[in-house]
Amino acid sequence: RCKNMAVMLGAMAQTPMKGHGMKMNLEWHPFSMDDAWTWLNRYLQQLNFFIENKRKLPMPTGCILEGFLKTVGFSLDSKYGRRFKSLLRQIKLSVLPLLVGKNLASH
Image (cartoon, rainbow, N blue to C red; front, side, top):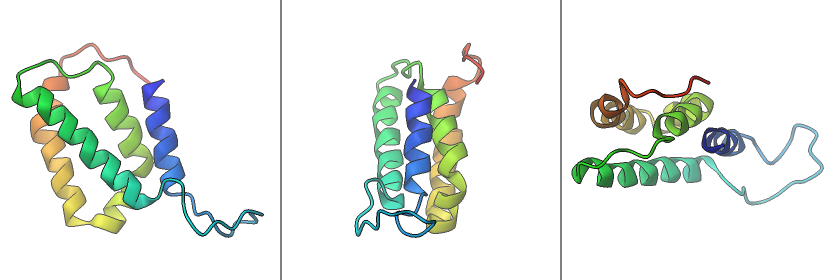
C-alpha cells in the first residue's frame, strides 16, 4: 500500500493540471513537482534519524523509494539536475546499504 501511495504521489506531481482536454483548469496544483521534491527531502531526513540512531529502517522504506523514484525520478532529474543526483548519491551511500540483504517483497 505504501509503495502505491508513493507511485500515486509521483504520478500526480508530474501530471499537468491544464490542457490534455481536461475540463478543470486549476490555477494551483494539489501536489506539484516542488511538493514532490520537498516530500522526498523530508522522507530522507526522517530516514537519517533512523540511521543516526542506529535503528532499523521502517520495513516499507525500499518499496516507497523505489516506487516514487521510478515514477517521478526522470522529472525530478530534469528539474533539479545536480541537486537530484546528490540526493541519489545520499540514498546510495546511506540508505541502500541498510536495505541490501533484507527480504523485501518483489513488486
